[in-house]
Length: 167
Image (cartoon, rainbow, N blue to C red; front, side, top):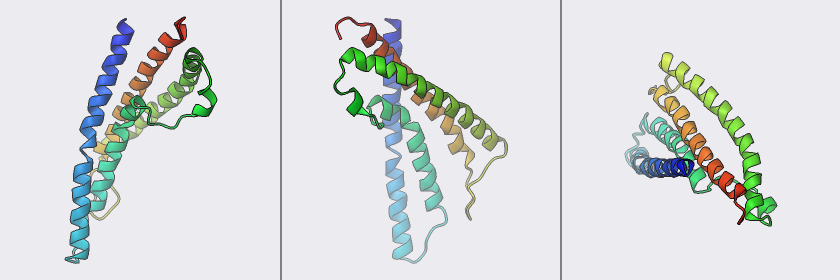
């Protein structure tokens, strides 16, 4: 029962993070509109719009991974499992989740190293404006952790389905 509560807590966390980061679309849209108006109406393009939108999109993408996993928004090979029973699907998901955890483990390790190195050298975007890049890179391990946690929640649920006699 505790595992189920933990899985529910992870769902709520990723639901809320997904909701909050979805609002990054608003400044991205506003920045794009400002850039288009300044560039084509006033012939005065900005040096900051592209870099800012790139960083906002990066933050949105990495922080929404757990939410996408929660809503089953990632690519899946349903053709193989669609004819299986619920229990067989759960067992298949448990087996394939080992690959998921292996891949996410490597991603967590490497993104953590990249974020730390970027922070230590105060990395900047290689552009005329040169805004700091390390805050974005520091979001990578956080986003990977959210994705990993959602994978754990899915593992818990599939484990319960696999051991159920009703499925």
